[in-house]
Image 1 (tube, one colour):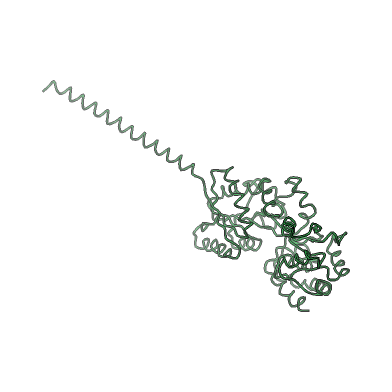
Image 2 (cartoon, helix red, strand yellow):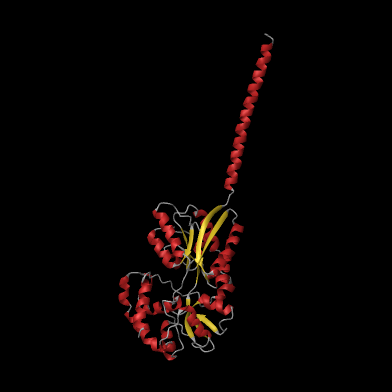
Length: 387
């Protein structure tokens, strides 16, 4: 028996050593597995939700840009949520506000696209994040005054403006200023038309430009109802030219209404959205004698904006996406797909794109008058249309 003790002791030592080695192996394996799991998790793309609305061409645009971006940035997944026009853009914004009030973060809406009214409302409601060129380098390529108009709470990634569209076969020397336009209208009875301002932005732009003609420039950025007291002179001008416009006071419905008159040769000049004119020229719907130019002071432009939800926890990925959208490469796609102005200044674009918008993309103004636009339409109906 005494001789067996060393043998048992040896077995004990060996067993203990094996146990310790096994324990070390388990810890090492666990550590390795944990490391591999973390690596796998870190390699998973960061995703964010991008909600946008509009016509089919807007969807086609993002369907083109999204794969371009993800090819360059496979670590970011842009989950696009398209809401067709007229099917619920307002409830989307309401969801953002409701989530903020309920303390539920972004409400799964990280990035949102819309116009100036929603930008302004969101600034009041405190739902948009303020943007900086330090995080989005290409933001420096956007016109500084345009960014100032929204206090850096939104990015005007594409734009369109109301311009003077005219038939160059009938008008050899088109007006270059608003005063010259008013003189031309009176000198060429029934050869100018603008649409009912409540039915389309081109007519609304013409009316607002006349109403604010002699007002201080800052008033086009002022939603204070007190400004309404300064409108009388502008409305008097609109009444004065009424008998000289198409049909001695006929105002077509919608933007397309006046384009149809220009197309058919019934009028020689109209205010029109630049993207609509370009698209219909490209499609052969308008004769190639139709030309465009901006006047001074300029008609208003209509940027479309991208806003980042302040409550989103995906801002770094979103900023990378926004920087891509503002790159000349992406902006050229926007120009070709939408026939709109680039969101960045033209000097950053190719000479081909610059020539496409020569004399049209510069000089337009952004009106930000809030609910006063509705008040102008009401007064136009009573003071002008009813005369």
